[in-house]
Length: 272
Image (cartoon, rainbow, N blue to C red; front, side, top):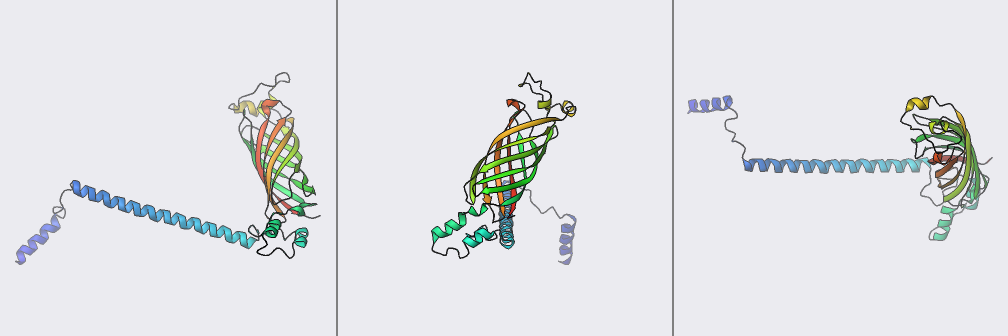
């Protein structure tokens, strides 16, 4: 009995795979089934992990907004402005819904505010690549519904660029989320191949931007434009405002050089 046991043990040690039967159709189906189960479980775990990560991000952003004092969810959102704070020092209480709504939307405190503007955006022509850049300037409210602004702008892409002085006016209702319409103008220097290579008598001729060597040889020249503008403001609180806008630039170089400019900025206001 002992010799037979040792022989069987030795046989199993020397031929470990001999006892494994070949995989048939049934075994293959079982293996695929187990693989699908494992893949499904892994997918569910991955989705759960992504959901938890997203929830953490939302909670983190909410915590930062609350701790930073944005007051995005408070009806008396602009208490850091003295004019607004004086008007709503007591504030409407529940269930005074009209009063709550009024103090949540009112932006009449903007009268006589002055601020610094930092913005960025992109503009494009049908005959050219997109230009991206930034703006730096100032804005002043003459009344709660009328503002003036001015600043400098720089935009570029691999083929061309321009620098300009920009100014304009805007009309908007004195509410927290305010659509606006405006007019503006800018004057500056440019190195646009489409503009610099056109003769005065042929305003419809354009140059392909695929030839970068021709754009490198173009000299700087003056460019002027006027534009209508539409957009919307959103007051974060009594000192900060976010703006999104679109402008259609009508240039001095002819209609083939007209272009859309889409951008946004944030403005920090104070009372001087």
